[in-house]
Length: 511
Ligand code: C2O
Ligand code: CU
Ligand code: CU
Image 1 (tube, protein in one colour):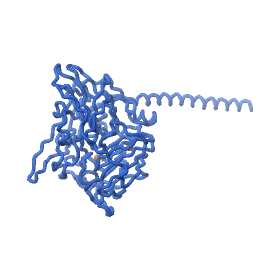
Image 2 (tube, rainbow, N blue to C red; image 1 turned 90 degrees about the horizontal axis):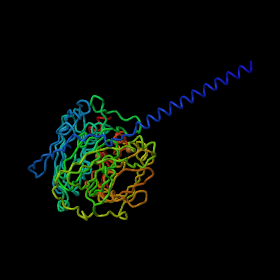
Image 3 (tube, rainbow, N blue to C red; image 1 turned 180 degrees about the vertical axis):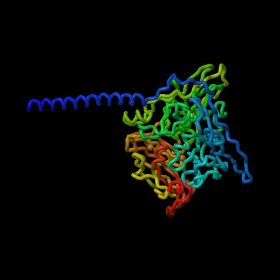
Image 4 (cartoon, protein in one colour; image 1 turned 135 degrees about the horizontal axis):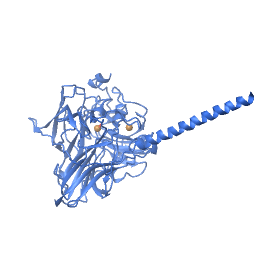
């Protein structure tokens, strides 16, 4: 009896052991499948059969007060991206994306924003220095059918900015459907430089967005299961074009790269690894061009590059696996191992001459940390900043008008985050205690945080005090922003105390 009992136990044990082994095997197989399935590599697989769409320059008129007036209408549409059928989309003045707005430093502009999408939304001028009440954040919601007409004076250097909705909790969805566009600023110093500047000819907007499609061609709006950063797509759109090519007719072409994706970080370069000149970042031109083979852009960031072409040659703009500075498991599930063919440049058999890129671009006045009135710390982890989630009724802090501040931003988790500040363009003082690399040496409004790094930035809050109307700072991975990885600050007069944000439509919508 005793012997039979131990044999039974042995069998049970063996059974348990083999089931465990089997599960292990299945687990490994599933794991391998998930792991390898999560890498996207479109090198050599994109048919560049569609001419790159170039967003039209928005028409404008000058009103009785001398203001340049633009009209933007957010509206529903339909577009066939060639993925099996048409899909519902949203766009400004069209079915997907919007026209490029363009204005000069010193001009007064006014934009009539009409909301035709049937849901409350807003339009934020990303990178623009302007009063908080004109900023288009979650406190400036536009009701369906309503028109919002912000106006301001353009008072900052020439730059490649952009606009997109900012409704609290729904930004990811609104941008994903197609609501975004470029806003180019010009000024005299930049106009005096020998840089390619003919829009759509040798000065090209390149808005890069990853999207997922259902088999019938509809946009797939579901967040990716793994990674925790929202939607990662396996198909790239450039200015809304899938498989785009650009006919180049000049020896040099300027690309205004905008990462308009919800969550994906790119590391742009060319398939043949040719070098190009990086001439500008988020807030304007650099002091001097930086010759490089790669430029990494996290969601919201921009870069202006000039690339040289030989007659009749073709070269592919590619996105290489971006160094996101996180562990390899999280990296894999957040696009860190992905490679994309983005856009094919096709040079004509003979090319018009382009001047060489000047050695010196524009002076960039360095902000001095010794002049900083305040140093603040921002710890980013999960969906929180400094342990708090966004609250539309809470002003996190007040900055005194005219003061310079140093902000130390630190990422404390294994997920990518990109830190964006409204109102100002900042300068990066250091990355993990070291001098910033050349691509972070100019004006910035968004910066990718890598693990363990502490990034110190400096900004001057020159004007537009308003104790009640806050500006936002947030993670520009739109899912994180929607989840509350955002805070609010006001600019106040010396000695003034912060007030209360209005309880407006931004509140009505989300309680
Ligand atoms: Cu581009 Cu607050 O956003
Ligand atoms: Cu912004
Ligand atoms: Cu984030």
